[in-house]
Amino acid sequence: MAERYDVVVAGAGSAGATAAYFLARGGLKVALLDMKPREGVGDKVCGDAIDVRHFDRVGLPHPTGPEVEGKFHGVKVFAPNERDSIIVEGEGYALNRYHFGQRLLSMAEQAGAEFFGEHHAFEPLVEGSDVVGVKVRDLRGKRVFEIRSSVVIDATGATATLRSKLPEGWWISYRVPKEDLIAAYRGEIEVEEVPERERGYAVIYLNVEIAPGGYWWSFHKGGNSINLGLGVQAIPGNPNPRRVYEEVLEPRYRVSRRLHVGGGVVPTRRTVPCMAWNGFLAIGDAICAANPIHGGGIGPSMLGAKAASEAILEASERDDFSMAGLWGYHKRYHELYGAKQAGLDVLRLYLQRLTNDDLDFIISSGVVSGRDIYDIGTKGRLASDIVRRVSSGLKLLRRPSVLRQLVRVKEYMDRAVELYSNFPDSPEGFERWYAEERAFFNEVQEWMKGI
Ligand SMILES: Cc1cc2nc3c(=O)[nH]c(=O)nc-3n(C[C@H](O)[C@H](O)[C@H](O)COP(=O)(O)OP(=O)(O)OC[C@H]3O[C@@H](n4cnc5c(N)ncnc54)[C@H](O)[C@@H]3O)c2cc1C
Image 1 (tube, rainbow, N blue to C red):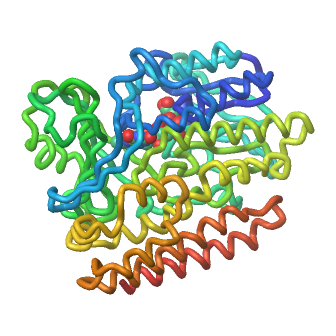
Image 2 (cartoon, helix red, strand yellow; image 1 turned 60 degrees about the vertical axis):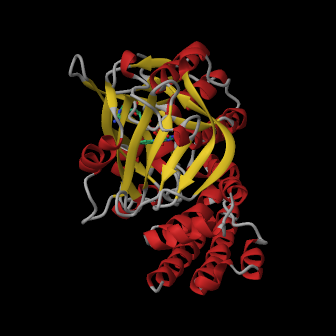
């Protein structure tokens, strides 16, 4: 290992490996570290579902061969009554996470990144107000040493090991509140028979009694295999997802083989407010890049890697890796995903307050169509005519309060998208923007408390 790199990437998950690939391809000297051994990279507890469109947006080849275990024709969202559902058409892959992760790693290495497995990046190296490298523990030799670099990327996932250890007063060290995390548990299992309604689809079941603040899912992976799991909002009083998985979900199926079971955490919110510092960037789950509604984070982690790499390559042309030099990462990411994500976060906060009766009503009344959900997922906004459509029909007469709430949610979603689309062009504008952001989300949450 060299003593100095242009970029050290901590974490070789979908975010880190993708960033290492783009940066090495751009001619930079890159070290990619992971605490797992090489053969463990990609071994991630996940639902394994990804929208095919992400690959074109990131500019990576689509998965093929052993990376793909199945294909989805869309997502079905079931109401708690399990009779009514909405179908959102759109192609998706059921990935083999391990083979996919290994492919990203080999792409990074073939582009010239140096990979170091079983290397734990445990602390950022800080000098004054700059990050100048990382402290690393070689887990085999137990040796502790420093690696210096122009830029450090935290791609360590939801723990954000490096970002969270930066000095508290730095904007980037924002601590994510527990209520913005989803605790999840899932099994990759073979069942005697995949129910007809789940075949070929990623199926989401809304039910606040089984999965409060989240949902439970069954994603058909082809043949008789499913990825079965649930996520619950990580707040006191909510059930342990593992217990619910074992006592409620698995018994619904006749399991013939358990391939793997395990749990994990997904942040489901808008991004942390600041994602770049002097000599430092964070990507993927480390900045809460996953979709706030369904927790899909593979695609956004790769989009973030692309945005961060472009910002670093541009900074390297100017030889300016200061916060100002790297600041363009925000704009790039918010254009690709972050602004939409902020809109979806408003919707997430609203959905987390609904009861099973509300959800049954919304899905059974047809107030929201599959096309609406597709549009919400693409733009982070409710269609502008949704309010007119529902109010001109009789559908909401049974629940006029839902109409009033939807009108307000739509307004708030639009404002959130605008806010993040107008992220400041330079660090000078950040404090003002952030004060506005905090005031806005406080207003949203105050309103929601009164629902
Ligand atoms: C149960 C569950 C189901 C999910 N289902 C889906 C789904 O169906 N579709 C979807 O798109 N997303 C899903 N997600 C979310 C998705 O898995 C994540 O958003 C995505 O993997 C984030 O990628 P990442 O690279 O940021 O982090 P990770 O995939 O967590 O990768 C982080 C990497 O960093 C390494 N690392 C951590 N700390 C250190 C350190 N200090 N030093 C060195 N290396 C370190 C880890 O070993 C790991 O390899 C799910 C998540 C969970 C938990």
